[in-house]
Image (tube, rainbow, N blue to C red; front, side, top):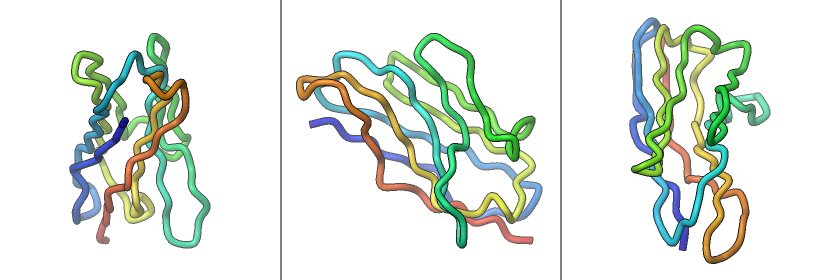
Length: 119
């Protein structure tokens, strides 16, 4: 069974940095795109950043220049380096991946990791 497990969230002051990690495990044949979404108080879930298997990264306008998504394909892991954090970045960050496994191809989601940015 495929699982995504996030880590790296926490409490940080505005202007600080955090690095999120998301590791995929299970009977995985291949992983296409991987990405990060966030759910902030009073807002709808939004795509923060995504990274196709062999393509360029995509970022929400609100995080461009501050966040960087990267992948370690050998470890089936995606990272989100978050710099110059703002209180508006507060939310639960979810990892998502388009995975081809014994169960076929589908999107998988992690349980989320909380990021809190204090002013």
